[in-house]
Length: 173
Image (cartoon, rainbow, N blue to C red; front, side):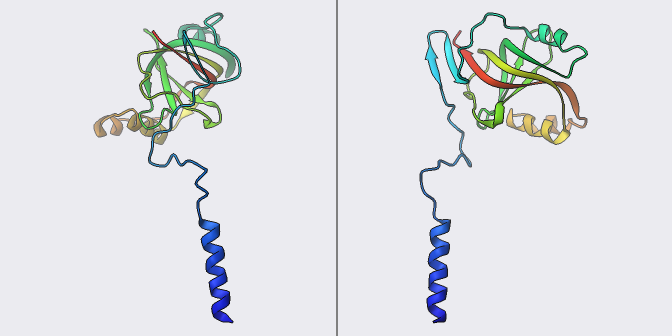
């Protein structure tokens, strides 16, 4: 009787731990960005509505509109300065004369291509003031391919404008 119970428990344990095979794992692999639409002007990576260049802000405009505020809704157009080299889970936008601005993706639900550096992006979502911890800054630097010496120089948290994108379009230049 005791052996029957042990065998039943092992069978239940093996069945419960068995992978269904239907759920892809992103562990140790770069996630493939999900392209929602492809049009002649670019590729859309998330969001139900079409992004256009009308009524977009530059990073300079955004910095001015954020003065005295902690959060605003915005649509930006800027160049991609860097992107997460692991799976495209963040990107930095930058234009001449501004600091790079980190763009994360709403609910970590989508990613952008690893090769989008130097391309132009249009993003729509929420700009907000954020404090990035030293640990996160070091993690981002590592993801971007920084050297150990560069990472070690990061010793202070950073208060900056960040962006949570709900929709992204990477423009083909």
